[in-house]
Image 1 (cartoon, rainbow, N blue to C red):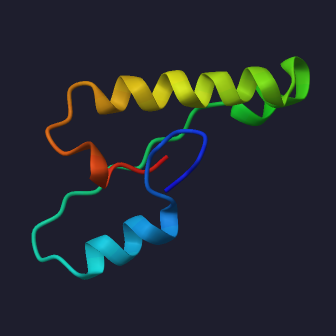
Image 2 (image 1 turned 30 degrees about the horizontal axis):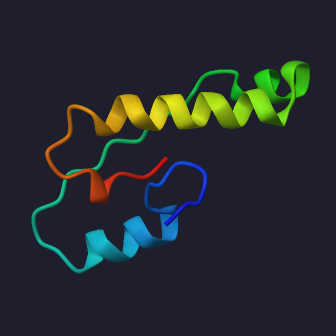
Image 3 (image 1 turned 60 degrees about the horizontal axis):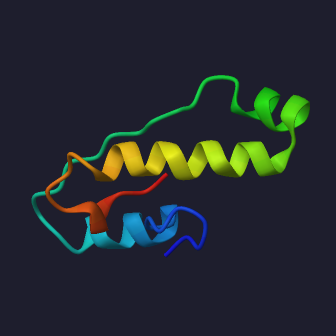
Length: 68
């Protein structure tokens, strides 16, 4: 589990998917995220990741299978 977002890490998500037959995967790329970290600092980048993970979890029936 990722300490910052509370979501699965990529490795944990891949392991979960391999052990199940009916999973869906959606990959999300936050465009220009590195530029946000570079210009605004890692604190702002971390806050954006936390906010974005909350947006993903809210409408999801099973948030334990989310990864960012």
